[in-house]
Amino acid sequence: MADAVEEHGGGLAGWLATETIRIEAGIPRFCAEMNQNTLPPEANIESRAIRYSKGCYIGQEIIARIRTYGKVNRTLIGFRLDAMLAESVTPGTSLVDESNKAVATITSVTDSPKFGPIALGLAKRTHAEPGQSLSVQSPDRGQATIVSLPFG
Image (cartoon, rainbow, N blue to C red; front, side, top):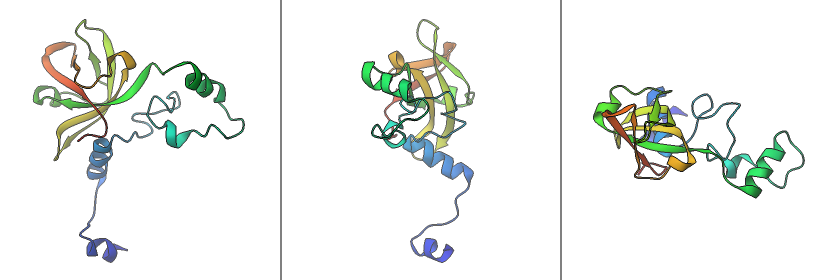
């Protein structure tokens, strides 16, 4: 198997490399972007995690209600971090809007060789528009700009 990988120019990849690629692709990971309290539409995995033609299952009523009546209150988004914020942000960091109200949480962070400091996070749907900037308690501590996923 290793020979086949090397024939195509591949090599070994560690945790940091695979985590960086996952974040760049905007793919959520259980225990980071998702947990037992996360709904599939919040993590943007509805198309591959839910089958509406399947019979009864636990949580079906909630999923049907979301599909029928509207959207979820939070959603998975990408962030481009400025250099100042990239130095101090860690998973679990809350981000605030201009009124200093917490509206998002960073869930995964990496320094991408391709895009620079980037992160994934969950934000209130009302604060998930690409181009919007959020900060950590005060703008002088750095900015996180919301971007569409996957990064590109």
